[in-house]
Length: 295
Length: 291
Image (cartoon, rainbow over all chains, first blue to last red; front, side, top):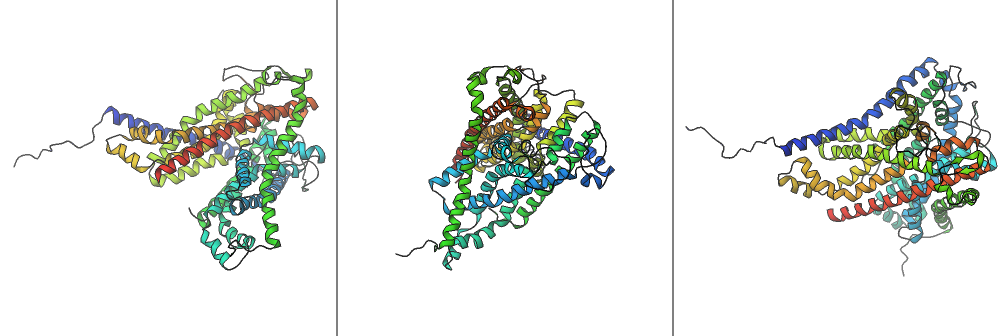
């Protein structure tokens, strides 16, 4: 028997071309590492420095008032938590219903009309408005007349959320199959009834998920609150009157402080805020994964 | 004739008008932003004329408002951010779409989206207390650029990923069948196909970087009048000036800050609109090709 010899060597050869390809692949992998490094570094700082502050005075950190003298060590972010919840909650009550209705117009009524086209275009424009511009706008329209309040912050946040809610809701309405609408019309219902009892319930999980993501973004915003909310250090449960504060504003003002105590409180507030936004995002993910209509 | 549209009664018509009103709110708010801010910006433009955009002296006590250093600072930090974020985002998008095994894709996308969820003030806090202090960068254009780069990477990555994923499989397989390596396949099929969309993604990232306020305000250094290409110098940017000076501003000073906001508003909107137009056109084109 003669030795079996392949006529053609089909094994891969190491050439410059294949080496280059491998090299580029390694670079792509390195890019992933480069993106994850800051995320890990930021989360590490926030958790290691924030958790210490938080646990040292648990649960006072969440309930005590903010010390008036910023170099004094010790808890409290209670008023800031209440302020964040008031401003974000108010913004949600304003922006989500209006945004959903706007999207209902765009997709169910106006589709193809000139007015809907203009609104859709302006929604894109509004998404790009820098958040500090919204802050100044609300200062001019509201704060100059009615003074500092959590509601001013809520208005600014609502302006930021509105276009986001409109476009995410419109995407969800597009996914509702037309046979559902036709079946409802066939039963003789009016258009508004069809929308309220058939279309919106079908799209609800997706709408909720989009709204939660918008709320998560709004809860972390600082610039829109800067001119409208003021700087309180005591509890203010009133939505419409008196200066308030928020977690983001406390982080902003304490970050540049040279006192370690103030910086500690900033880290604690940062951890609180990150936990809040991550929880909202996670809930949104669960909604999308469990209940939402799929493309 | 049979009327096949839904039956109409009063409640039905009322609902329709409410929906129209909600949609019209977008136009109303944008109109009010333009009017109210334009009105308040007028005094300083009347006082300074075109010097507002071209003068380098910003001195509120002398009612001198030259915004050029801040316009420079905004554009320069945004460009630093793009220079850092674009190659990385593109690499990540290519890794996720072309290299990563199926099981790794979703966790990676989740992780990168998580960066977008972290509030910008938290990045600012980290920039001020960790990045600028422990890495010897100080507060400077570069520090601001790095923080902005971290913040815009998720948006550029996710758009780039969507654009790249529209590359027809047939085109990629054609390249591979001709003996191309993975990188040659990317160069020959994926990149040419998604070029337009990638440009749009980068511009949307630019729009984000221009408008980002709080993180930049914390780490840029708030130095007056610096027009220098030295990335290690402290500087200032339009949103940072507004955030930092508003508290102690008198009427004319406030008018100047609002004029800055209007300038920023116009620049970001132009950038965003061009970006959106590019992305939509390239998406439509590639979808047309795929079907």
